[in-house]
Image (cartoon, rainbow, N blue to C red; front, side, top):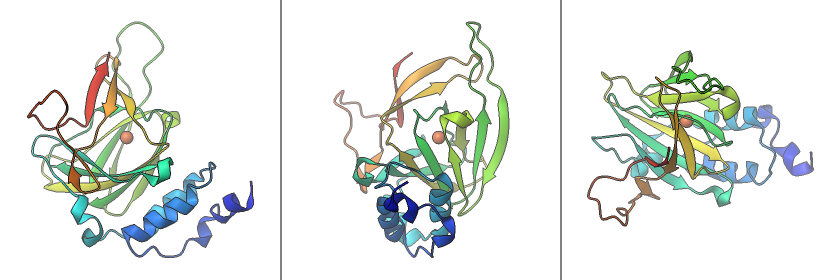
Length: 218
Ligand SMILES: [Fe+2]
């Protein structure tokens, strides 16, 4: 571990984070190193207390499905994404393509359901659910392929929720899973907006809002 790594390894060193911009500046410093201290990044994201004024300009809701809105590309080391959920919207069950994933709830409450990876056999088999957790306002949790698969979502009777997601390294595609069979499909990760601006529609000219996870292979 070199001096740079040591600087960002002790969570006790973390002082208050005043704004989202401040958090992003600190994340740039931490991710200069290839060594990721999971507890340190978790505590850093916890130290930021959500303020709508910081992230409101990135929050774009869609009545049909949850949206992923790119806030920052982290010098190529990480993507920072604001995800906006309306009542009843849920992600598919997915993996994290060997990346670290940190999530913080900025508004509302989200529910995370975790699953085991599909068993290594050829017969279709329902995925085993391993846990269900509510992620409350300002809470942070960590996820990776080593911990299994998960889906995120918002309860039907809740109005909206907003969450902040950090992926390192950035993910361009992942796998989504059918809970009844364990079958996987490869999906491209796309954004509803980037840096506060709506992402242009795809080259196909479709007028349907861009999907967050566009299936590219089964
Ligand atoms: Fe995820």
